[in-house]
Image (tube, rainbow, N blue to C red):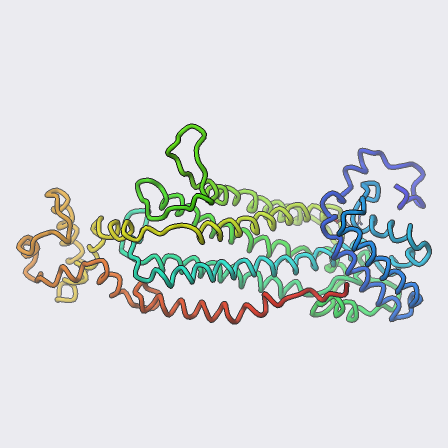
Length: 471
Ligand code: ARG
């Protein structure tokens, strides 16, 4: 490789060129690389380290190169290893001497560190925006379903009735935390590594505040060794991505269950379902299963980066190049899954009647019967035991708690009166659970209001976000 030609007598083997080269994947950082270079060139001129006219020419040419890359007119070469050297080579081929001055007081080590941070900031905001869309969708759906009663489960056994709104808002809450998790990671990453150079800063009078500000960072980072080797923010973002996948996967697992023949609570639109090549009757939730399945990649990507980082001595080591493919893969997967899940939820049909019928079966009023007795003076433990024996008796004799005649109720306890039927009706059972966070309309509406306010407040920061565009 010509770049290192000063030190080396022999040409690098093709095998090693291919092995080192990251251009096939880091080319997607071209925009951020050019932003970093322009900020660096302006700073060099501002500090009179290079002539102002050279910096101007560098900036003008880099912008031309950017436009050509965007039109697909620039072929990158593996011979120049990565995006940094490819762009620098194209620049120097075009403008000669001034182009060779760009790398003054800089190393590829701080260059890649700044590129990756700029990319991560830009993309993290896009994921936050998708999360916000998901939260709006879930909250909007919840508003329509505060009276759509359905079974609530523990151990996937019918437990107590809830509403579909209550259920959806549980997921809105998970995605809200995911959103904040990315925001936290974003705040921690907001220090600019440019100027850390190879590992030990530079001997030139650079202005790191100036470049940090130009690129929209809060400040320069404090330590050059850390500046070139910090990839914590990628771990944090990928941790947030992994949890988003966990949340989507849980929801998808329920989509698979709830669209199955025996449940039938939900039906996917034809657009988001698939058929079978042999069984004509099938309508399969493949997309939900794929989202569930793709968790494996994202968890693997996170694990892979953690493992890469754990034994790296300070400061830069080539191992760090392994951060890119895993981060890109996790990011692309999470964005793709959020998009598909949004479409799937937006177009599905909710079978209210089926949900209600399911909520009325399965002895889900049992806790309410026990509470009824407790409120009339029996201790909860005695009531619990008595109702347990009532359930067994009903099952043996083909009754449910709502069609068990009053005289049978009375045989179990004199405390039962006719009002027991109202007490165990699904609607009453849900609406009485108006403790904060519970499924009653009143409680869920409060949560919906809170969520709407959260979305309203977060939207300007997220939708209005733009990297400092020095291009
Ligand atoms: N492609 C490299 C990476 O992604 C850029 C930095 C290379 N630095 C070096 N000293 N080899 O990590």
